[in-house]
Image (cartoon, rainbow over all chains, first blue to last red; front, side):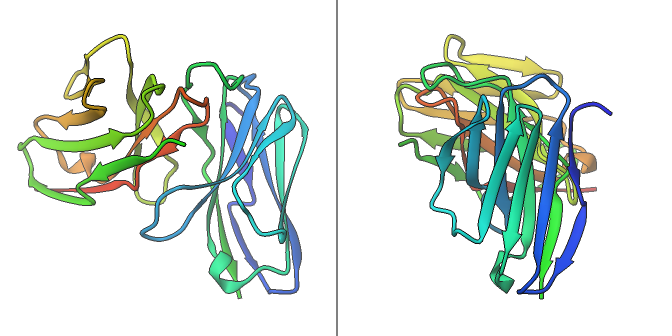
Length: 117
Length: 111
């Protein structure tokens, strides 16, 4: 499979559950991102990993825990979420990004539609 | 950090008309300006981009213009079709490789 894939595509969980979202990119990119997209709201950047190192944590609550074991895989571990965390969670990747480099195209996965009951 | 403003938030046009979406940015170091289209229930996908060394770029019915002095860039869609209906996001990057996105414009093309 090519591009950026995400699993699961849909997830319903209770507030006390623990679950994980998975993202995989087959593009040879070195930077990976997690975004939250709520209804009628802009894309909210959550985390950025560059060469497996976390370079950005956009004031995300600790109930979201990212993990990047290698440049191709990115996880988002979820624990004791709130109903307001229900949203579409998008993973993206880009070629690479030393901080002084020009921007690159981001390639998005299909997203995981998360519902917290 | 970078701040990107996008207008309008909603744009309704008749099929065949032109549509223009405008964005402004704040960081003069930004040098890469992509536009993404997100159809309902689908992922955002790049439709056109422009770097700061050019002022305009065209790809069939879509074009992007950049005014570095005024720090604004625009997406132009001509001869709109119903399948152009989607949410369009602008973004700016370069001061940091991490892009800053606009809030999105919901384009509705009426047949």
